[in-house]
Image (cartoon, rainbow, N blue to C red):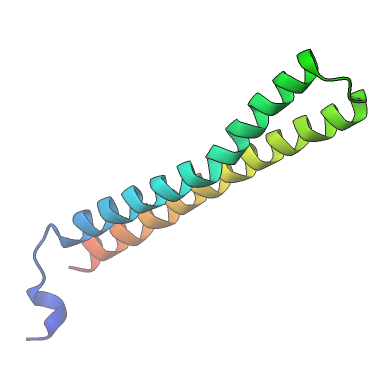
Length: 91
């Protein structure tokens, strides 16, 4: 028998869970600066005399970082789910 057929049935599920956990941590690490930038934008809007263009650029950057992070996280989860389903189906 090959080594592939001796794997426990729960291994693809555990691997998917581990990848999901690590991916979530990376998502949160990338999201933290976006949240900080959001707080900075709100602070600057209320307390600083910056041009509206500067505040708009910071606000757009905040939105772009958040949206890109969320989309890439969902793609990561979709590929992980696909790999896990394929691995379960191959057994």
